[in-house]
Image (cartoon, rainbow, N blue to C red; front, side, top):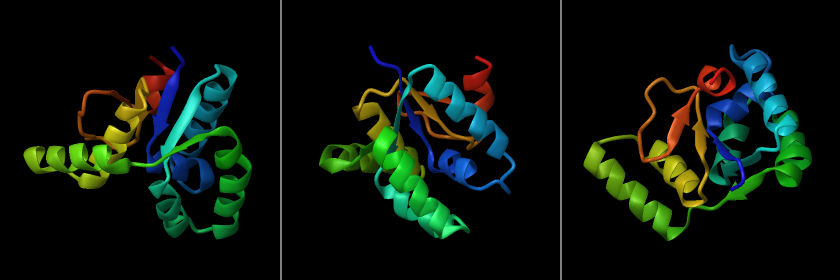
Length: 136
């Protein structure tokens, strides 16, 4: 089975913005993923969020064009993910955006969901932060 990893929005933003505290860890992470043949996944809805939040819009557009669209896998939610995430968010009283990302990763059979959120939801996929992944 392929090594599939899903990157949360905060991880991609860490890669793009050198002013963020986890920028260097994000660079180290990307190097590790590339050197160890991991398949990188994100959801398509992240692209507009990343563009909106990031300060350097041109860098984001170039990163989308040169990295994401050429080397990463970009997933759509689809009705099944939306249904499961909505039900989960209602039952657990948690953030819908986190549930959507997590169920998207789970549906495409990612082994790991990488985030820097301290309290990310548990939807049945391994949730790790930088240190848990790089030092684990």
